[in-house]
Length: 316
Image (cartoon, rainbow, N blue to C red; front, side, top):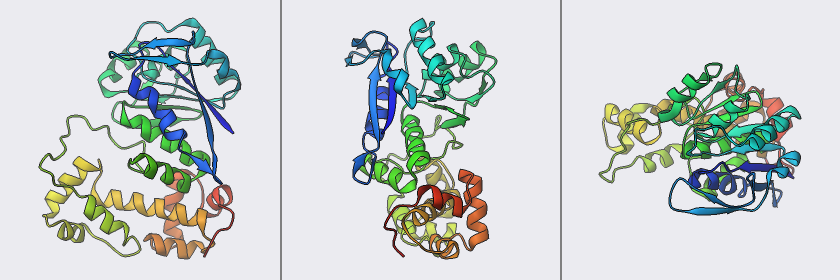
């Protein structure tokens, strides 16, 4: 089982600390848990949070020694982290563990020298401070998460969920990741390059494009235009684009392409359909189009993706 050690750096952001357990704890493969999540700190016991809560952390840093993935969640501290944390992170990276941070946990990774020469991100409010304090880090302030080799960083709050779902998808494929997203009632796919929602208001009048998105998901194998989506929503194309950006963070056609790639990934994993048939059922046109989009998105051809993530007992 894949072991994930989550490091709590006081004062820890309680919401961030809950994310790995929430996402990875819901992942199952063949009916069994896919991950073991262990929360740790330099000293086990009560740990202060950025609010009025206190959390009790059960493990010490020794759990990093056997972890496949090590995550540092957000903290309200910008001072030098505990030297024991920094040493444990360096040791984990040195033996090849996957390293990740949520929100301002990126400051701790930077202090450990693990972001030197890498692309990284953090909560947009703190992105300037991260870049100023650690000029060797290439800070990307407007994205949800960044994967640079074995080191991953995310923006704040719900972007941490996106990062964890991305990691589940990389480990076990789209079918498992989408099942986790359904259980946790979050969006299945928000890719790292999507912008952080900075100062972007969401409609508060009760209107939503959820019904139109659901309608489109049932018709991914058919050509769909912005005009057709707008007609279903009962709005103009301009209003459709504005609401899609507010609710989904991307344009309608970008959202459609992402959902089609995700459908193709599930079909490759769960069926024996030919690549041409998968492309047709997912609305990507033909095998060449599917191959191009899949390579751009995940770096694998359809055949290689199926070989890596195919489920036993696939159906046609």
